[in-house]
Amino acid sequence: MISTMRTPLIAANWKMYKTPTEATAFLTSFFPLVKNNTAAEIVLFPAMPCLPALVDAARGKSVFIGSQNMHWMQEGAYTGETSPTMLTAIGVTHVLIGHSERRQYFNETDTTVNLKLKSALEHDLFPIVCVGERLEERQHGRTAEVLRLQVSIALEGIDPVRLGSLVVAYEPVWAIGTGKTATPETAEEAHTMIRSEIARIAGQELAQATRILYGGSVKPENAASLCCLKDVDGALVGGASLNPQSFSEIVASASERPKR
Ligand code: 13P
Image (tube, rainbow, N blue to C red; front, side, top):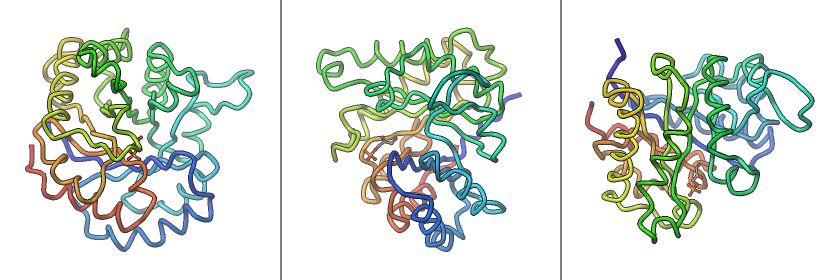
């Protein structure tokens, strides 16, 4: 029996920002700001060199540390890559898969997203699979088609019973780092499409239990209106997560979300 309680998840994607010293300084300021948080799960995705220091600093606190990427193989001659086993060995619990910047600049495809998702599940890493349409795809009325394809290839060949920990992040590419947030209606429509595609592939029960986050220019000023939507279960935050104060305000906005 899958739990249908979708606890909000607020995640920080720090991209290629912050050294280990800056990352631990963030945590020192951030912990007191979220000490009363019970509304949301919090995950930070720092750059690779920060992972060991942040895992250590977050031990015993209710903040999880994830990697922004990983290879799907356990080991091999893949210069510059990091394996799931290496991540779990240092205490990393979550992994971002298929962020649009990796798709755009590093040849990440729906097929590699699928390989990485399978591998993350095999290694007990909590996956956040990122999907989202580009501006020209939206302008040509292809949003539904693009989202369905991204979700269906990501989940291909995976037994639904193994997908209990799946989280999907809807990040419209035109909203990332642009200050152009999707309107609540646009976000809700996309989230509903994604949930219905998960239901088609893996069943209604899993779809209702799967958390779908919104990402793209989320800020303290707009977080509550996005997180309160019926099909939005939290946020994946870039720029506004670099500052402990603004990220803690986004975490606090999760408490305004009705329980579901
Ligand atoms: P911004 O919040 O800076 O738009 O970035 C969103 C994002 O890419 C999170 O993964």
